[in-house]
Length: 56
Image (cartoon, rainbow, N blue to C red):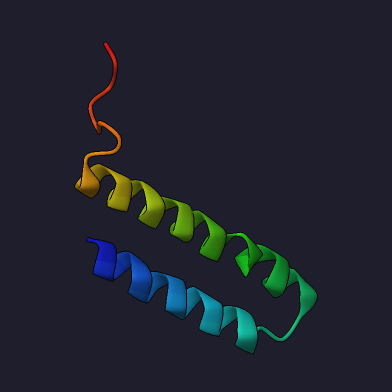
């Protein structure tokens, strides 16, 4: 799962580098950050630092 997220991050960064107009850049801009946050959560779950189950 983490490997797939890392691939997604690299693809999004490549898309951002190749984006031509400003609207496309703005649309793609935050997606790598969201994927990086998702990767951080997955790593924390894997390491046992956080619990993936809801608290209720």
